[in-house]
Image (tube, rainbow, N blue to C red):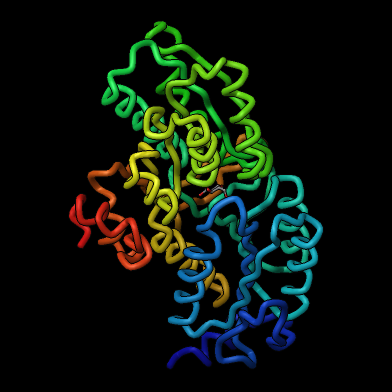
Length: 362
Ligand code: BGC
């Protein structure tokens, strides 16, 4: 393998202090002088994806390249996030990939890493005003557009007349939540303006907190006297919180609800008829693209990324990889299984076996 030679080149002037195991024992790789990549995931409560998909696919990509890596999860704790980053750098990481918890604390982590000669990548969420060398994500405005168009389709399928639409947005500190909202409002605002739809309650959910989302939606339903005909929920976790409240009011299945992430729970809610759609983001593609850049940086190489995204805060053009999401309805849930993102065994367990068979998953 060329690995040995490459690692020597990559280590270069950077001091690599060995690869002492740190935190959750995710450190793997050949050890010694091999450059190490640190990844910090945001939490495991706002979406199942971080632990069930991102961690798995990133680790697989690094393992395939024989690069030592350390993947940790900040569990929503901004102070812990910085501590983890500091530890990773002390332990010899030369590349740091982060999913920020907010732009302010993310920027502090990126700037400190940069000052220590560590290369940085924004993974999934752009850190506004930050200094990451690359940004890898999906086209998040398109994600939002697919949610808006999905809700329009589901309301039409139900024959809804002048529906009242409620919006449950993601965390106000996540730039992605802003982009999702730009996307779905570009579809919904003209409908409110033409009075085809009526704008109902519109609220953000701090930290994408699923529990809080349930409380917020309960208040929305009360404040409108139960008159909500469709819900734009920004991800499957928020959507599931909405569905739980709808169930208590015998409204599930009558009020279309959107989502995002194609989680097992979201897909099962779609199969049950309680959720209208989700947006599937092929996390393997995202992890592979980010890992490729990280591995190159770890080897001291720079990659030519032609697309850029303008950081709206600093005006900086950030070299970016943006992937394309896909809208999923009951008819094409099968596509997510065929792509290997969820297994038939987990999706079609128990009562869902019959529902899977109905849509050709067997
Ligand atoms: C991600 C979504 C995720 C949400 C909550 C967003 O930044 O793009 O996939 O559902 O955060 O974790």
